[in-house]
Image (cartoon, rainbow, N blue to C red; front, side, top):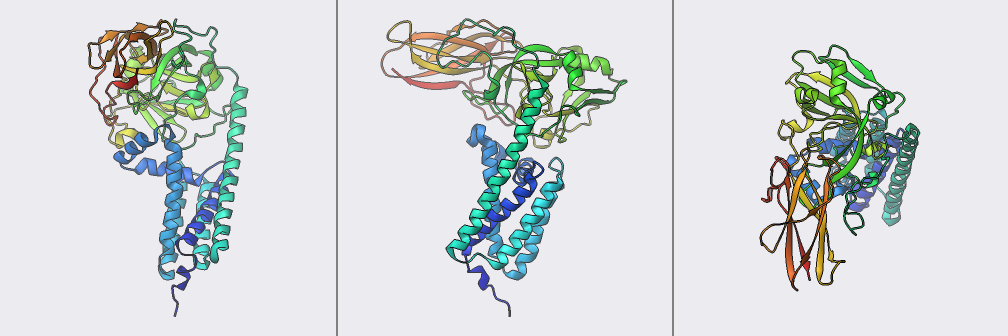
Length: 483
């Protein structure tokens, strides 16, 4: 008669070590084609997790949400292995098979479809089955399995980094995309700690549902304009560049709470969507423009305001004089200044499809409102430092935005006193952010400082604290300083 004595050898630590080894095998096989089993599972988790879970993860992890997701997937896989190890031999075999089949199905599911990922999932299941049946013996056996798994994970990471390096080399060969012929100035240069007027590409925030960006060959890539159009188009990167223009605008994530840095100001290079639509000639009944990424992700926008130019949207192919980075949507993305990033258009653009109102987007299915959400006026405090002009004073400075209309004024409130205006830097574009600063004379002690922005259209920043979901964040950025 069979017994379950094997479950005792190595215990939970042994099973965890087997889980690390299985994950390493699966990840390495997927990495031979530049893919990732962990990222594939993480994408499905993101796609299916309840909105409160997603929102909590974003709020707690900040700009490290992708790292947190990868760690969560890895820890979950190891924990699942420990759970499988606690089963009887008879129950464990079908459970491991089901585990492997599920992981393989994730590899087949769009957008993570990849034969290498499927093969990695199958191999990981095989390692689980063999390892949990035999179990590592003693401490050295456990450490051997765990060490082997860690080494395989490191090797997989090195392979993926090599793929990333090759993609970077391909992008560098594309050459400049526009260029900042004159570095813009607003009169507030030299203020220590104040955000740059133009955000450096490496400092731009990243937010999307992919844990790693798709790798795209720009020589083969084409942007298709399809659907209800009289003239379907297939545009190369060079053809887009021939009609591209530069414009300055701030891009803001819908999860950017007051004071956070999920916003960046860039000098973008792109083709006006109005010009693209004029060439394609939308047919009667074409009411939605679906922006579709290479992985199938969609964001749709109403056609008419884009066609008329009431909403100045662009097919962006560069920023700050360079091609888009992979994480920012290379080779092209759609950007409508003034819309939150979640609504402004897809990255890694593959297709613009004109269709009717039957279109249902990714985030609509997750409970977000279907209508495009506009960025509200917001001011951020970057600097609270001893004043340089006069002893005993405090310099306060920051940035504010209210695209597409622009900032009319920024005001400060100290210790619940009346709002007072601050000095604004020169505006480089209504859709761009605007820097500001002021100097105040405060008595010794602790003081609370708040900032608010007022748009040129007359909209005053809402000071009521509100979470991003489902209508966008509100509230004042509030800091405490000690004199």
